[in-house]
Amino acid sequence: MITSKRALELIMRNVTRLSRERRPLEKSLGFALARDVRTPIDFPPFDRSAMDGYAVAEGKAGSVLTVAGEVCAGQRPRAAVRQGEAVRIMTGAMLPPGTMRVVMKENVELLEGGKIRIKIGEGKDNINRKGQDVVKGSVLYRSGQIVTPVVLANIAAAGFSSVHVYRKSCIASLVTGNELLKPGAKYEQGKIYNSNGPMLRSLLIAHGLCDVKEWMAADTLSALVRALERALASSDCVLITGGVSVGDYDFVERALDALGCRIYFNRVSIQPGKPFTFATHGKTPIFAFPGNPAAVFVTYFLFALPALMKMSGIEFEQKKYACAFRGIHSRRNAEREQFLPVRFVRDGVVEAVPFHGSGDLYALSSAHGLAIVPSGKAEVLDGEKVEVVVTSI
Image (cartoon, rainbow, N blue to C red; front, top):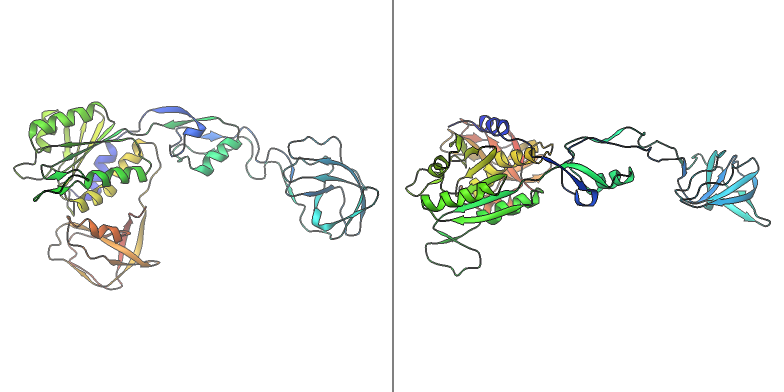
């Protein structure tokens, strides 16, 4: 068995970013930028009014000024504003030359004969200066940045209609097991419903990795080889659940060998998730999870998610926090590193959720993360510091 740290190192060393593509901006949401985006214009692109009011060259309280014109958003001023004058101006409109400040319309008294009196002398100039937010030529966003709604809006504000992004992975999820029923099928004694497939699919979608195909395969070597061959032919990455242990009907390793895959490791010194396997077929990574759902959940967050993010070009770092443990946690076998489901009871404090082992999927519904209990440590005491991997989405 290898450590979780060594397992992740091997995985990250042997997965590569996918190809780049140019996408229309409106279809780039959730993708990672494949090039830096530099703005060809200043933000704002000109000096503009921060509010509705009057552009003036002077603005002392009590000053009486003649209204010499009006500028709406999108218009170019026709002339400069001069001493003794004011130009009515709208929020976002370009300032006339000579403007020293904008007086809010609420602070102006309208007089007869097209004049105004300034009621209150303000401290603020109420002007957004050219380039005060971002200077022309600056990098708006670096390669690896996920395109969020705000990122997309800023790229649009710079005038771009398309961006270079990394292509997202096409992922095949292959679920094995003669005992599995599809959700919705009539229940049969001795069977269980397939929950690993829906869980992996929903986790991938929640993390923005949306192109997922799912297959189910019987526990025979020939069926698994056929299904795996199909999955490899149509995917950038393959996820397998079940069939990775040492039972008589665990055929994943033999199927990988039959198809010429390179297996990097098939045991990790963690609890749950020991029989997790990583292999490649050419440049296609294969993640083979144990069959128990809690083990699938843990190994997905530890190993598959960082790799899939890298493939999609996304700068990713697992969220981890040092927290105080509430209560006492003991275990009989401390040979492996343990990832214990916990919930936050308040900021910086966690407690273990009731958990009955790697088959206990229900326990995960109340967990916010996984507390790391190092190998060799048999007990965590009340108030002791633990590192927590956040898994809530």
